[in-house]
Length: 115
Length: 118
Image (cartoon, rainbow over all chains, first blue to last red; front, top):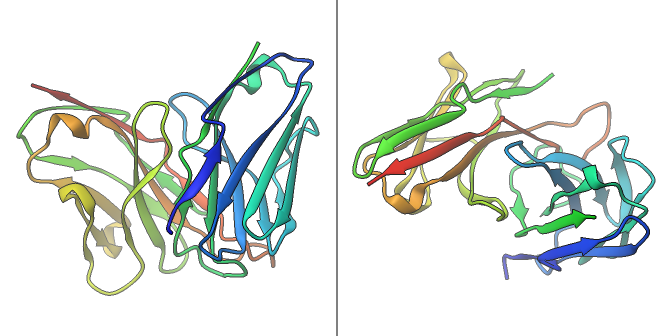
């Protein structure tokens, strides 16, 4: 299994809602990443988990809350989002504790719309 | 700091014509380079990658890329474009350990949108 699965594929939420995005992989990878991608722009890194510990937070607002409950699963909890947070959210995984990024497996993304 | 430049924001080619998408990188050591394709609203699909060895790399869907260290380039090519190749293409470089943090950040270029005319 060489896939990264993201659910849901589409999500529409109000600014007062709480929702979660899910990312799952069964490749034994120990590094998982969240990216945000606006239209016609490259992906921007948000968070990195290595061995289930948060390694990097790229100055992301606290209304985005990541969670890595086990080595296969990465969640992104959303609360009190703004319309400008509407974007494609991508998950990525690779072998953990590496010096060089020699691989990257992306999920299909969750298209989030905040109304 | 590492950077990736894709000089062409938008390229239009006719179906059956050859294609070359440019990618230049700035990196202090031997880079790990990737090309991804993204259809609208979809995730990123890996076309090919270069780590070491043969500088001409074959990928999926008939794509190839050539690593040229002297030019700091990793251009993507296809001899005959199909209408289904219309998409956005991203070049990316994998970073080494930064500031003692081992997390392997990918740096992306701004992307090149490919339009294919029948």
